[in-house]
Amino acid sequence: MAKLSEKIGYALGDAAAGGITWKVMSIAFPFFFTNVFGLTVADAAALMLVARLFDVVTDPLMGAIADRTQSRWGTYRPWLLFGAIPLGVVFALLLFTPDLGPTGKRIWAYGLYLLMMVVYTAVNVPYGSLLGVMTDDDNEKNQFSSFRMVGAYAMGFVMLFSFPYLQRMVGGTPQHQYAVLGVVLGAVAALGTLACGLLTRERLKPIRAEKFSFKPFADLFRNKPWIILTLIGICTNFFNGFRYAVAAYLMEYCLHGDVTVSRLVINYTVFMMFGEAACMVFGGLSPWFTQKVGSKKKAFGWSAIICAVSSILFFFIPMDPAWIWVMVANVIITSVGIGFYSPLLWSMYADVADYATEKNGTSSTGLIFSSGTMAQKFGSAISGALVAMFLGFAGFVSATDTVTGQTVVTITNLSSVQTMIWSLFSLFPAAIALLIVLLLRLYPINK
Image (tube, rainbow, N blue to C red):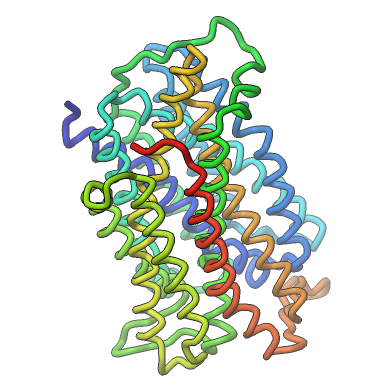
């Protein structure tokens, strides 16, 4: 039976990766690249698309490498222990805006973004795989997974709430604010990752393949539960990715800037912070909800239905700051569904890993969990790229002035841009949530 300290340690891993680095990359990067850093909409979209093609190779490869790692620290923990500092440093550099022209900025952004994906993969794939070797008890796996989600959402809550106030505290230009916060948040992410590696334990020994082979990769595509769950994982991250990537544009161009209510500054991070709080609470209640419903599959389905209905309703809320609390209430309701299903996804990956071990005779835990990380990055970044592309189609133009080096944003059709933003936050995610419900009907494991 794992101690509480180990569960907290495991939670710190996703507090660092999911609550800080990935949360910032999901919610701030599209807006940061187009409105602060100075990339064109086309460059920002292409950057995220190129990175995803890169991940198709690196994520499964990292899973296979992690499965074959042997050290005195274990199979998966050394990647956390030695990857923590690189994760923090590269993240900080990515939020720095160099004094370069358009071509130099493009090279800087592409190079560091791809490097960030490599470092994130090297840390997060082994982190996810830890769940498969810390315990063989299904209920305890659910508990670890729930702690993980609570850690991610709790840190996300703190970060999103504090972000506008930290910006004001730092002061100066937006470029200076993001650079300073990159250093601070990168340091916290590094410490959380290191703590996770130190506090967790690997109790189970994976059944290793004797040598590297492409057979485990081929086996994946004969594994129906893995195929369906990977598609579901991509969809969940598309759902979150659209909402987080467009939130800053929603506040800026639909609600005309930050909304101040009784001294509370509601900018795009605070707006989504209310959802993080709900996810934190209901992520902790996910094991209870799953027991009440009867299975992970049913609990996931009902959670997706909550997300679909609430997302559709958001589209009909008036695009007016006076309705901000109705919008917040809707975000909270949507996040009830997200909170319930988020821990289930990773626990279901552990089920798929067990299924694969029984079927194939060797462990492919790292490889299978790498698909979860790939789905996370694929869904979030592709949705960010699509947001940039759709906004460009609607009439949003951004570029760097070649003379002053400043970012210039032009809206050629405000009404079209506003409707697109509103739809990207509501109708697009709703369609994805309904697709999740359909995919779950095909998922064969009923634990």
